[in-house]
Image (cartoon, rainbow, N blue to C red):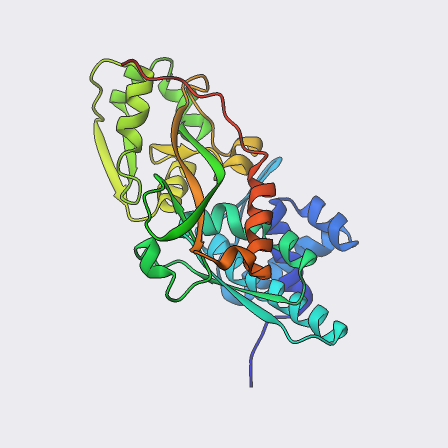
Length: 303
């Protein structure tokens, strides 16, 4: 027998986590702000874990809350898709997607419900193993990777431009007075092992004198480095397409917004000939439409 929290509480939490707002979640679910707050508090009491950090005018997920959001969001998406498929009298097809962990958490999952509303009978299965792209196609219909596009004997489609700039908690800017790139020498730099070239690429664009951090912390995934930046542990290199929400809510800020370095785009990769497969074509078209809104004015590095 499954011991599950109330479905209404899970729906309230998922909506609040997606919007990072109890008020917007309440409007989406047609309930009161108090009802959303009560449901979330019930979950936190049940688990003995804080799901949100609350401050006046600001609501942010904790690490535990973000991890739970990913799983609950996927579960609710599957319930919705299965329900729509049953109502339509269809047998769901599945689409296997292999994508990097941070891209999946920060960019793909928050948008995936829009695809499933359009294609309710298609069951999405997400993998985050960081295998070689071509090898990953043995177990996936589509593989998503950052370029350059040097994969052989496959078809690749660029769908998302990427750019980077340093980001940190707002109070770090106020207290440490980050006015010039050289001011970063007094900061802790947060590195993501998955993107080892980011800091050097940005420093080349910034045209700064040799700058080294007072200390550094290294993380396996970019999402962990960004979480640490949000907790004021230091300065991380922020992929702008992944942190639009945090930038809009000012949970992360860019000390040097005019210094933006271009990086490799994200590509959808599939086996040759699969472009005529309806589900593969539909997902690639959707990725292109979602990625079209991400364009950046980048700074050129000195040659």
